[in-house]
Amino acid sequence: MNPAVESYPFEQRPPSLPPIHSVKLTVNGAETELQIAPWTTLLDALREYMSLTGTKKGCDHGQCGACTVLVNGKRINSCLTLAIMQDDAQITTIEGLAPANNGQLHPLQTAFIERDAFQCGYCTPGQICSAVGLMNEGKAKTTADIRELMSGNICRCGAYTNIVDAIEDVMNQQAA
Image (cartoon, rainbow, N blue to C red; front, side, top):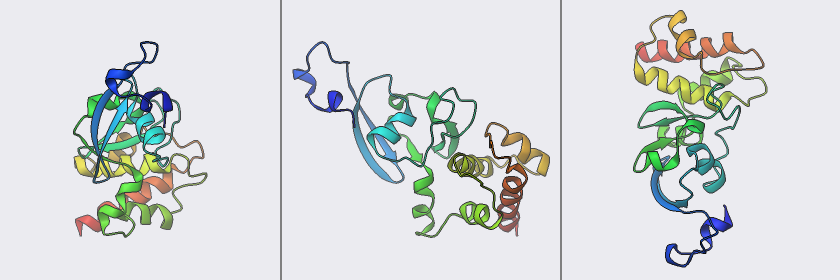
């Protein structure tokens, strides 16, 4: 946590410190109120203020997808949104997928393991959150759709075939 932001109540802050704002986030089912600078990204709020380090900082420009989380069930790049813009939002990170599934791994987490859809693992949390969002959207019907709709998530190890196979496995299970 940033001690400069937390050390002073609003009315006692020296003018040299950055302004802070209160934001309420519900992350993985738990409501949290943070005192943050207005320019704090959702990614930094999750990692630095809440110690949820599963969400990764990759490019910090919204190009790699490593920071993908779900906001109100939709996938977003958390490096491209300010935390204060998500006030009162329902946010799910990779850490929240298993608890939402009664403590069992989410089916996509299991499929990624079974299909060896990760190599170094750095992109995996973003890939899985993006895939959950993709399935929530309901637009992917074919392998080509999955590839296109997951194209914003980069895997530098090249596990794309296994990632697509894992997503198809779960989509086929849900369709059955």
